[in-house]
Image 1 (cartoon, rainbow, N blue to C red):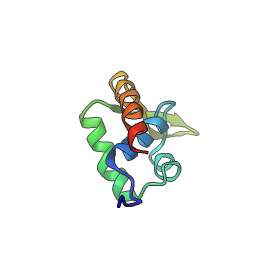
Image 2 (cartoon, rainbow, N blue to C red):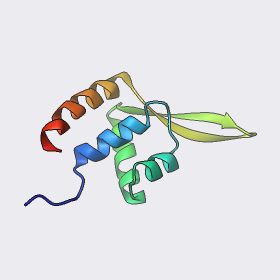
Image 3 (spheres, rainbow, N blue to C red):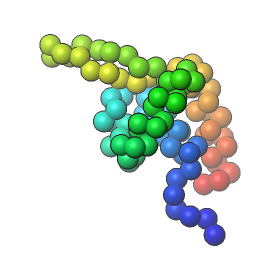
Image 4 (cartoon, rainbow, N blue to C red):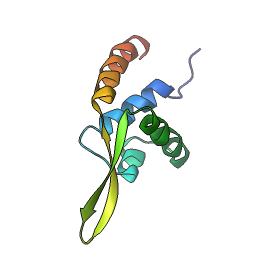
Length: 88
């Protein structure tokens, strides 16, 4: 019997999809339905592998960090979608 937990592939795919147009950490957390621990685990890992990039943008006199998918990440996302079709 398969459990209802999401796989790492599902989580990474969701993060990459959300970061296509650029997303703040909180946006990834809430829209991805992820825990803080998951976000803290996956974002550094994906940045280390050059799959997403962190950018600092100015807004309303301050700044915030957004995460954007890289070309390498787009290729990975496309491949993950193909793989996940067989498991979902």
